[in-house]
Structure formats: structure tokens, C-alpha cells
Length: 268
Image (cartoon, rainbow, N blue to C red; front, side):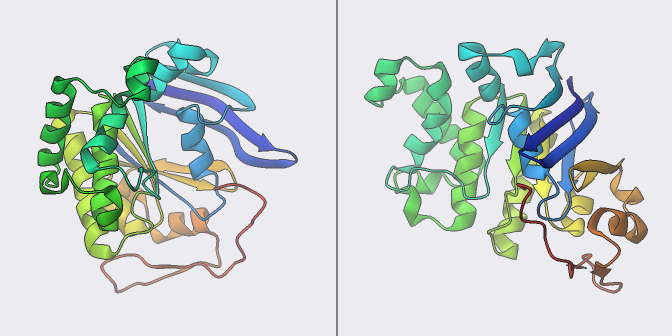
């Protein structure tokens, strides 16, 4: 369904993603893990065409995604929805309007300018909010919600696009543990109930093990692991995070203590 071949992104002399080759043949929940600067965010941004690869190819259902321009590119970005760490909502706009912004790629310029939405879209937005258990907040400004609630609004906006693939770039990095669990439960449920591919950049091994069917490890721009959560041993984790990372042996979650300096030249 979705395939990338030798996908590479350079920023000047720095290689953010180095010849990544991956395929996603069936809907699954995928976690991408690695240190800051490993290339995780850049990889997702290339998949969504927010940034263009330096080299390599992206294919979806046989179509060359990297060659798309104009409306065809916008259509792909609606089919491959992006969820961001900082939510990217309009703070002073109400929740329903933020969710309805998921339809912008298929609306006319005039309708977009005046925020005119069909009743059917409004009802669908409310249905999605009910599904995510935040319909009570529909009339509130987005800025009045907690971080976890805002992230669920962002997920609802992505669902309004009716995507085939959902990309989530560190969706829980700025959340407390309780809200992080709610958001990850939501993403997992969307995969299970809708049969959508969900690809998440994640920091913790425990989250990847708990929620994902497949885990991809990146280090210095390269894919160094691609397997099941059961194959993600402490030894493999050290290959991903570096030999100087230490791991808690007794906690239910694997805790990484990353002692080495993080490279700042490569985008995440």
C-alpha cells in the first residue's frame, strides 16, 4: 500500500534521513523510535509532502507521491493526515470549527474565506467529537481545553479528512502520563475500528511495545531496526539509542537515560 525506497533528505552537509526503505502492505499501528535528531520527524514530513526528499521515492497504491503537485498533492495530504506534537489548532476558534478545518483541502476558496461549512460536515464533526468523548467541549475555544483534549481535537480534525494513513509526530511528547494514555488509546482504537494505518513517532520503548504492531528504530537518519515489539530487546534498544543509554531493568516501562549529547545539526 505505502512504500518508500531509498528516501533521503539532506540539509546542506547534514543527512537527516539516509536511504530509508520501508513498506507498509496492510493497515497496522507502527511506532518509530529513536533519539532526538534521528530523523523521525523528517521522515514523516516527507511522507506527508510537507518537505520534499532530496532523493528516493514514495509510492502509495502504485502512485508516485513525490511527483504530485497542485491539487493532486493537496489530495494526498488529505489522504495522509498529519497530527503534530503542538496540536496546530487555532486557539481562539471553537472546537467544531477547528475540526471542520480538516475539510479545507476539498472546499472552494470562497467557502474557506468565509468559513461556510455544509450542515452534513458540521454533523459529522460533532459525531467524531462524540466518538472521541469530547463533544461536550464543541462550543469552547480550543485554547480553553487541556493539552490532552486539544490533541484529541487534532485527531478529530485528521479524521474529518477521511484519511487512509494517519501520521502522528510525537503526539504525546507534551502531555502528562494520564493524557498520553488517553491519546494513545484513541489512536489505537482508530486503527482497530477503522482499519487505518497509524504511524507514530514515539520517545518511550514502553509506549511502542504497548500500542504498536510494528516498531521501526532510527539512528542518525538510518533505519536500524524493523520488527515486532517482542523483538525489541534491551540489546536492540542500545543499537537504536547508543551504547551509553541505560535502561531500567525492574520498571514496567523501559526507561531510557540518554547521557550522550544530542546532535543539533539534524532536524528531528
